[in-house]
Image 1 (cartoon, helix red, strand yellow):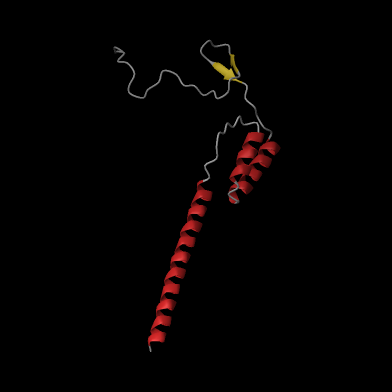
Image 2: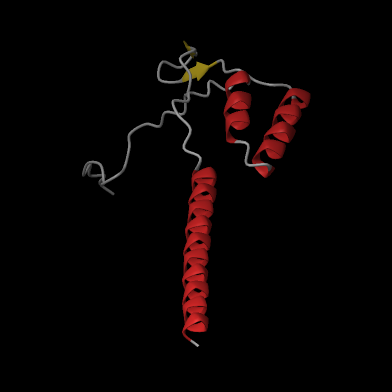
Length: 120
């Protein structure tokens, strides 16, 4: 049976890179590299995960960011986009606008009733 090389198919790769950090070292094989990554002990990891779970339950975005930056995760962060806080703020604005509209309508109705009462 003859093997014929046809090239790479769309999306196919010749090699896979699984390294995240910059701490790369050679191995016995010239095409295989290894990385010495930071590794937490289970008690350390459990503490971080429990704290992360508590912050997530409270939607405490800044505390989540601070926790991840303090942990040896090489977490890189530039700005917080707190969609939950933005949604809450929008809801409060919407509710306030609705209340203001209802109050305005109520005051107009009272004014009209008062005018009608004066005409009688």
